[in-house]
Amino acid sequence: MITPKILAHNISHTLHTARVFWALIVRDLNVYASDFKRYLINYTLSFPLIYSFAFAYIQAQVFFGKQGPRLGSIMFAGNIIIPILVVTYKQAIELLFDLENERFVDYQMSVLSARLIILERIVFTTFFTFIMTLPFYPVAKLFLGSYFITSNASIMGALAVLFAGSFCCAGYHHYATMLMKNTSQLGTLWSRVNHPLISFGGFWVPLYIMSAYAPWFGKLALLNPLIYISEGLRTAIIGGPEFLPLKVCVPALLGFGIVFLAFTWRSFKQRVDPL
Image (cartoon, rainbow, N blue to C red):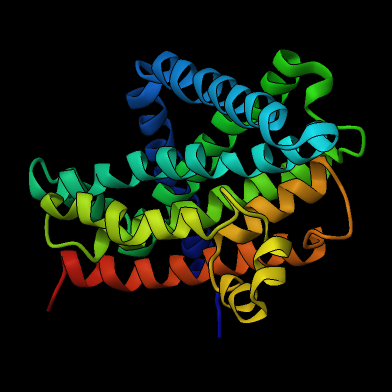
């Protein structure tokens, strides 16, 4: 039986945990405040300008003829995979570096459980990445004008995919870094895992073209979480029946993210407390 005294204690403990959790988020905000300008220049401005010019303008003009604007826009829409992956990666490796050197995480373990520490990291990374990638398509539209097709754009749909994609990649990269023994393996992650995920995740080729080339390959691509980011954003911005619908992409990304979060919880607990 829960007595008023026990109930009051549980409420007090929950409020204290929530305050500590929020304090760690504020701490991360302060840590990355000095890098905010650099992130804005690198990922909020440089990436959309370079990719939109290369894919939605030059490539469209050279290869696609009259269908240039639409096909160029289709190609460009999937390019956001790169900044999402890079930003979540940079956030996730901070924890790996900390485990090797300063071990600030030991202090965190004294005030929060291992699960809440990882949850805080993934929550912060998700929102940070989401904010960094919000201007990606507006910047490209201002730069390209009519060369970037957005007449069927769904703002809410695009926001949903961006957020779910940020959450998925935040969970993925935290789990990936927890599987590494040390930072010397970071290059292997990109060459052996991230690069194939990008190449077959809709960065270069939309899913409907993969499926038309080889149906089995299109089905295999559905195991790649990045395909749901590129397909979802193509649906939300360009529109068309050839892309996966939002009602498939958003739940898939959230599902992948939850699975990665669960795996990260387990790996992190084993890493900091192997007994």
